[in-house]
Figure 1: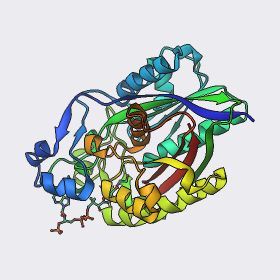
Figure 2: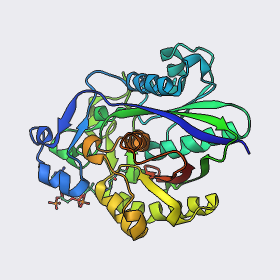
Figure 3: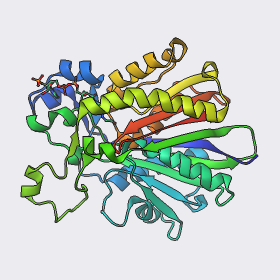
Figure 4: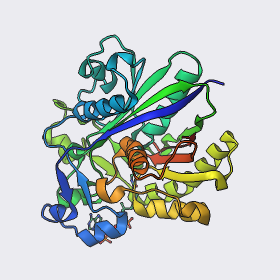
Length: 330
Ligand code: UT7
């Protein structure tokens, strides 16, 4: 039966590293507070680059690994919180950046669950026979929407910039994306939101609106935490059942890198066996929203933690609220 599988992943983070110590110089915070509450030690911030700059670098690496030229891409799926322009989105922009005018492209803005929704769409596109491959790009420039004064410290320390690109292809082999389950619940929209888009140039974002918190990520951290630790295990169980896979078969769980404490709480709520296999790289990148899962997959693979034939679970929770999980036979 025709399946969609992950053929290659590329990643890119901007070179500028911002450590917890650097943040101490900008606001009232401490390296100790940030490490204890989130597990983060440093993150990368753009220094003039825009969302499609990061996306282009990640896409070029993914295509090189897959042995593809940009012209080979049949469809782009693009996920971000911060497009270069409000309209058009990053999908159409990437056809320009990659030099492939005319290639179909669609944008999704599902925040931290962007990768899961992207997998869901890509799987459907491929399994229906509509396309033989999809380039799923997840690129996030969040530092421009953070408040680096003490007033914004609860979110400014958590998020980082980064991008990944995933080549998803069709196969008749017994491998690939076995299941994807996604959810959304808008009742909690205001618990994690960006009211006004952050773009290269937003003439609507006046100083008065900025003072009101528009153009900034706003979060009720406790509410996000509470819902995340319940929804992660629920949706993972749902995705495993849909795939007909048992927990004990899972080699690695790669959750959205939101916060090490969330990852640990989720691992505890799963079971001991899974606790040993949960991957984390949040200490290096912070929370890169929809780019975090593919960046983690990229690094887990580079570290030899994922091999062909392994059963991998990816899962996310974030703004919306939205959440999802997928079971993948690598
Ligand atoms: O993709 C989803 C993205 N979001 C998340 O994953 C966030 C989920 N939530 C969390 O991870 C946690 O709620 C946080 C890490 C955001 C906060 O941890 P917390 O234990 O819930 O802290 P809190 O918000 O209750 O704040 C405790 C104290 C407060 O001071 P007072 O009122 O006790 O005096 C805050 O003002 O910590 C203070 N605080 C800080 N102190 C130093 C908040 N941010 C900082 C900071 N540095 N950066």
